Length: 209
Image 1 (cartoon, rainbow, N blue to C red):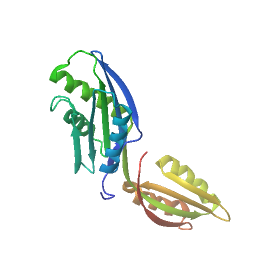
Image 2 (cartoon, rainbow, N blue to C red):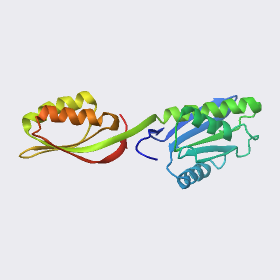
Image 3 (cartoon, rainbow, N blue to C red):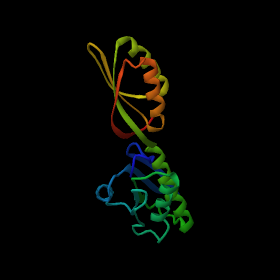
Image 4 (cartoon, helix red, strand yellow):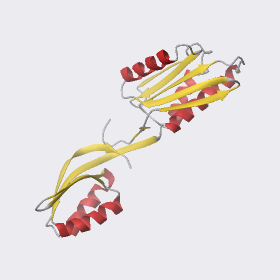
């Protein structure tokens, strides 16, 4: 993955509970950055819900280069693949979804299972908060106090991420800005400081706002 890409994933682990014709579906979504992480997470859920009828899972990592699913005893194609398809439709990556089912005594049929597992996965992903990371450039700005007041107002308007601010003889601000806005911000800093401030690019990273 290069810093020219955007990266959409989930922000936190989630857990939702959904009932369909007396069957209880407990679905969880979490970010994973490797297949090992996904398998460890799945194993932990299976251990926690070892008494469940099924623990269906799917994960999608590195733009789908790694994508796996399991019906875990449900009829083939009714649970694991619909879960994976839901992940894809949501446009998220590096995500693992595990849906635990406690059978309620009423058969749902193939179509009913597809809908139930798809819905449970969708709820879990939404609850995990979909976020999109974008490439950001990191900078260090050294300036006088009078210039700092002007920069501070401009940075707030531009949605720039302030990492730290040190106040000494001069002010040193470490910040990050979307790569797509970097050139504009650089020009504005020169304009505000009348070339008296010192701006140095320090690195790159992903961030979101």
